[in-house]
Length: 315
Ligand SMILES: Cc1cc2nc3c(=O)[nH]c(=O)nc-3n(C[C@H](O)[C@H](O)[C@H](O)COP(=O)(O)OP(=O)(O)OC[C@H]3O[C@@H](n4cnc5c(N)ncnc54)[C@H](O)[C@@H]3O)c2cc1C
Image (cartoon, rainbow, N blue to C red; front, side, top):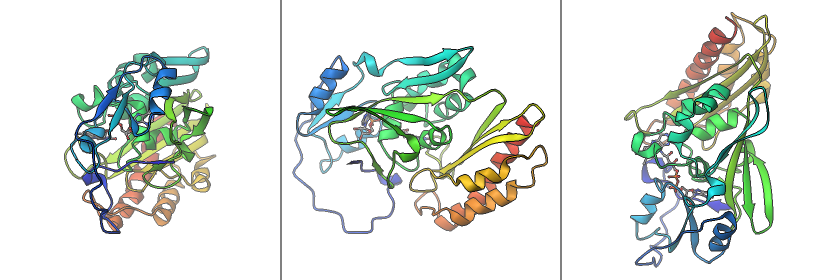
């Protein structure tokens, strides 16, 4: 498993005294592989860390206590830079986003927006244009910072990550990607190589609502993603929610989501679902918001997100 230190504003209040500064390299060396095989070989060199858009790594590079000795640049690896369609027919199938694909590219892809609208929505809202032009799909997942938005949306979309490493390839659901806050299942020597998202069936409506408490370009204090599927008469037949940024990793309560099934416009379960999420989530306390406030905002935003999806889907 790999752990990634969060930026100061994303870090939860420390529970233990900080470790004394470790010896850090005066300079950071770079490797520039041009294939996936080369990238994995470079990563096997002791002290090597993958580098994508570097929007988070920049904090570590500026901190002598955390500066990596060797970075493996992923931007020159063609296998990581593709947007592909798998098992595709009639505009449906699986979208495969290479790990080095930038947020800006996802946001600007009209076909992608048509197939999975929530992807374009969330990736167009991250930070600002400078961040989105270099930050990557792989970096935003591997960074394992609870405040970030795309993991919550990818969790709600039932996305999967593909990992390649010395022991071969494996696929992990985003839902299982964070065994605990700030930790991923990526093993030493492994790279996150792509993210797979199944195109939702027709008559699926999705919404992602965020609560920001600081600047518009800051990460969210709360993010709620809702994906609802409707039958032709406007009755909800699929429901999947995810709450993130307020919790140490995205969470879903499938028994609560199921309360929405079988209901049409004028759903009476939205309040019960929202109250259920608020009662069960464990929220973080940080500079963006206190835990108790976040819990109450979960109650409000889950209900709002369900209402917004019903409004569009049961129309
Ligand atoms: C000003 C600013 C505003 C921001 N606002 C928002 C916001 O509103 N919402 C939001 O969600 N986020 C926000 N962010 C955070 C942003 O989403 C992340 O910094 C960015 O997505 C990280 O991606 P990257 O490609 O730059 O990762 P990098 O910084 O290159 O890497 C991040 C971590 O992931 C590892 N890594 C990268 N790629 C891989 C891979 N393929 N396999 C394995 N490990 C890998 C690296 O080793 C590193 O540990 C903001 C950041 C900034 C600087």
